[in-house]
Image (spheres, helix red, strand yellow):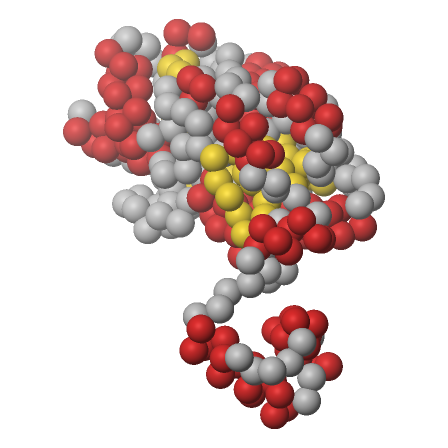
Length: 324
């Protein structure tokens, strides 16, 4: 239509500084008139890159992972990469099919959640020679390319804060310990720190639940029905804490006068509930940004993934915790 070579059109679209202004203008007019879009499949065959990254992350809705995924998407987008997302259910986390689908799509890199993913996943990725970054990884046994923080230390920070306020009897609403390494490490940090200071976290005062508002409400109700004494309630994330607060208030308890409550993650709503929630800040956005940078560097250089990178956590003290 324009009367120039294919290579001139290609340069005008991808390296416009190499084509004179009048030719570029004629090509752009033709592009708009024809509705022309470069064929990604053909480009991928030539470059051996699809400029896409696949992530396998279950349940984004009521979780802290949403901020990380959005930061990852933005970081990849700056380099004109597309994020493809697979979301298997919790019960299907060992299923290879979502990962196989992403690899079949020709993704240039993979993002996985946590460093306790099934060995067969890592084996499949390695056999296909695809760089992998692990987000929300725990500091223990983190693989190269892992980005996360020390969950044991986060649990210790919570326990130390409550112990400093005089609390010695604790209850804990946790994520599912058997299937979640991050939850296990937080529990370990809590338990060992509390025990070292003469406090008590009885197994009878631990309820495992999914990380949702309703789950927190139901778990707190379950704890109250057990009629055991505790002055501080630790929740595995802020969603659980908000649900627990609703339950405790329904039972006539005042926070923090009758009960101190603390969460994990420093979710966006945590500063705006009544009372504002004391919590541990997790570097959710930083994890996503760093994962994008790390993965893109490995894709571009075809080099090995760097050593695991662990980011700091911080206690954010608000009005939901107070002296015993």
